[in-house]
Structures are given as C-alpha cells and as structure tokens.
Image (cartoon, rainbow, N blue to C red; front, side, top):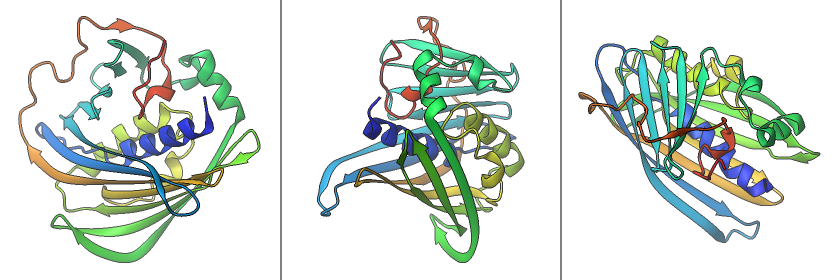
Amino acid sequence: MKYRSVQFVITSILLSVFLLPLSVNADHVVKKTKQTTETVMNGSNQKSSKNDGTTWISKNKMRQDDGGATSIIIRLDKDKVFILNHVDKTYSEMDLPVKLEENLTPEAKQIIQVIKISSSVTETQETRVIKGWRSQKFSADISISMMGMDMPMTMEIWASKETGINLKTFRKFYAVLLSMNPFTKGLLEEFQKIEGYPVLTKISMRVKGVETKSHEEVITVEENRAPKGTYDLPSEYTRVAYNPLILGNGNSQR
C-alpha cells in the first residue's frame, strides 16, 4: 500500500473512533459530517472530499456508517464485531475481546511489522460551546513511523459531557474500535484521559511533505428507533478475512 493511502486510512480510522456516539437507554442516531483536504507544501489544495456519516446506538449494539462504502457493527450481546464492505458485498467477523493478530490478512500483518506508534494526550483549560454543548479541548500528539519514514500527527479534540451520551458505555465501544485496528490498538490508555464525548475532532498529518487535514463534527444527537435489521448482517453478504486497511477508504478486500 502506498504511504499516501495509509495516510488517508489512518486519519479516517481515528475520526471514526473519536466521533462514536453512545447511549444506554434507547436507540440514538448521531449525524456527523467530515471534510478531508490534502495540501502540498506550497499551500495549494490538491484533493478534498466531504461526506456525511450516521451512527445508530442501543444499549449493547452499535452500527457506524461512514460515506456508504463500509460499516462497522458491534454486538456486545453476542461478543462479536462485524465489518461490512458494501462495494464487494462482503463482511469480516471477529470475536470480542479482539485478538487482532489472529484475524489479519497477510497484507495487514506486513504493515503491522513495520509500524511503530506512540501518543500523548494533554488536557487544556480551553472551553467553547459547540452545537449548544459546552466542550473542553484536548490535544493529542501521535508519532507514527513506518520503514524509517515519520508520519507525525496532531489532533484537536473537543469533548463534552452535555450531549446526554452515557460515557461509561461509550468507553466500551471505543475500546473495541481501538483494539480492532493496528493503527490504534496501542493508544487506548492514553486516550482514556479524554473526559466527555468528542463532538469535534481536527486531525493534521504530514507524509513526505504532504499534509492531510480532516475536520469532523457531530451535527445532531437524537433519540429514535433504529430501522429493523440495522444491527444485523445482510443475508447476501459473503464472509472474508479481516483487512483493517479498507476502513475509511472503502477499498476491496479481494
């Protein structure tokens, strides 16, 4: 996989993790929007994309749809996590707790062997109101190294305790998402420092002089009944080996 593709995948995965909505009493639906821009060193924008995402949550179930290409279903009631690829009409399945190395494709295992990641999260005293929720700013510095190449990343995370989302339950699903990907499985302890539910996340990552910026924001959090089958596997989908590299870019697993 090309470095630039990895760059987009990592930023997409992190945004998916930090804007996961949760509540424990009834189904909730969260609408969000994401803007990604690739910028070269002279400041001109080369590529940009924008897409909306939706997440459905019940007490023990979650479904996250990002841009229509892929979906993640977490079933705590069955100790399972499913990753749907709508392009190929395939799905991958893992038991909980996730044992990542036992579920990866050969391609993904090769990526893991050459990637080193470390992170630090800092709480700030800066606050602001976002969509009516009083939020606090947290800053994260993430160091990513692959085959001698450094890919520094910074994150600006605005988290709120006023969204009505149950934070204890949020952390359970959040831990599953982090553990199921080689780019994030080692970051859980540091990111537990974030108090509140992230309603706005900004990411900047630089690879070979190319900077990718992503901006994702929660638009609404509403209580609603999920449509029938929301948390179930489509009957026509075929099971394949798990490949975390499809998350965020919708590429085929084949």
